[in-house]
Image (tube, rainbow, N blue to C red; front, side, top):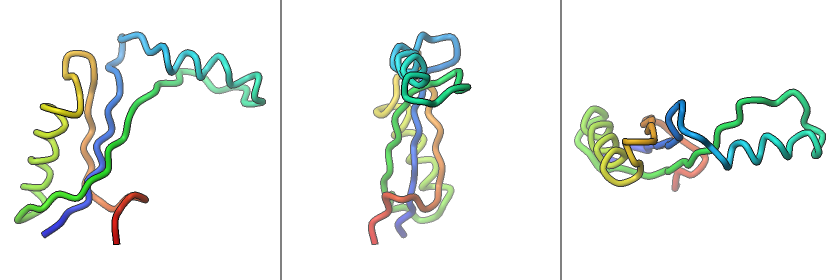
Length: 88
């Protein structure tokens, strides 16, 4: 069975986020006042073939920790479910 998975990778709290800081500084000039604590990250969308949801989640978690993120400075969140990137 194929399960849609989304992995979101962000820098851990306490790690400097220069991309987020740059975006935050640019927002007022673009008319977006009142936005603070901007953090940048990456999102990966995939289909995982597994026997059940638990196996799909375990595979996606291992993939996120071993390949998609640097566990020393980044957190990876794995979510099962449909996303806008799902293939028909």
